[in-house]
Image (tube, rainbow over all chains, first blue to last red; front, side):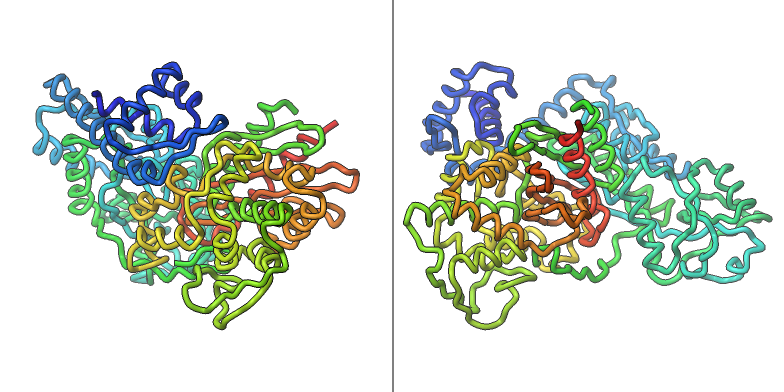
Length: 320
Length: 292
């Protein structure tokens, strides 16, 4: 029996709770689907579903086996992906993406590291926002990417989460530029330059919340991302930008702008490599290792600090 | 407004609030509908307490139990939670219908599990099946669900929720592995409850009274800041999930069942915009149904 194919049928019926809908999803007719489920039940010696005239419900035994079935299917998918790359040999291709805030030095280190680990595979690297990467995973157009957190991680597997602490980009003559480390609250009165919200909505909202938590609520948020545009806004319009040290918006000996660390527990960009669940293979692993290593060595990225206290309020309804 | 235009407005409102949302709204009397992703399988979380409530009253109507029957609630072994009996310290004794009131008004997990023990999980699934909710299934009790989440989150408890790896592995957030339904199934349930098809009218009235006593103002009700509009509902919340299903009644007799399920990208526990968009989206849908 083709166990993988039969398990696909089992998972589809379990998720749809309906033979007709499961059959439609699998692109097959209902009678052969029912037969497959019966054959699988016979093979396993376990009743997976209770069928009544109106509906089908998974049994306790079925529920217990569902997790195992999903894992097995994910591994089978990974095996197929790996086989496709091996079969394609030299022409094999890993479609990968980085978010636009990653510095050129980090990109170079990543590419060199990946070539060392997986030299025979071509790496097609794109510059994409987190939102674009998630859409790319869903459309099967992207194999792996370096994303920002928080984002919706449904259906994703993740590499280690690293953080790049943010500092502030200020005009050299600003009074705060004289401080070794700037408290967020000292930025009151400045507008904030930030990437467009659609690039990573949750990251955008989270950063504004962190600023508010630190006592800084900008009167206006100006959207910009390109280095020269951001420099221009900071130089001429009463705005500051928050960025990691490695963004290199300040040249050594820069006469106009300075970068200063934020004091206290600064907000950070949090990254990890991500790929669709079950589609990880050796190439994805090599990309993950190369990206993680490149961020650590060139971007001063470090592991997550111990999480802050989290006070659940009664409206949360759950308690941990 | 066309159905597609309403769906687009709903999706835009959800995106603006930083959530992915699925909604179904139906005019209880005419059957007119609006929504987006109405057949999406969703984790119900505490919204499943509506199913427990209906089952309890169905069994009472059948004479299987008496709503004034007293239950003992010893302090040990209570399902955890931040409200009601779940957070009280001493032994309690109360009637089934008062336990139902606590389960619905403050989402009391201990009261819900007390009732669930009395009626049985299979009875809840039989009730939802009888009402034609083919995509709705109760897989475990509320205490069990929270225990599984504690196990998945690990020893650092709620703090671990900031870690995306933890969010990705919580079984309680996978509709296939926990209590589940769809927005359309939930409005079907509310329609039956409000039209007295789920239970005889006296039991229907008892359930509607209880559902009108929910204390939370921040979700569905926030979209209808009108003193002459009546809102009854039940919320459901888990890390990244915020839900509410309920019925909105206008003084002209218009009444609308609305089911809203959302998921945030941000695992933070306090996200007022994500709560409020449930009301905003419900109002977009109800206004579309009320449009001449």
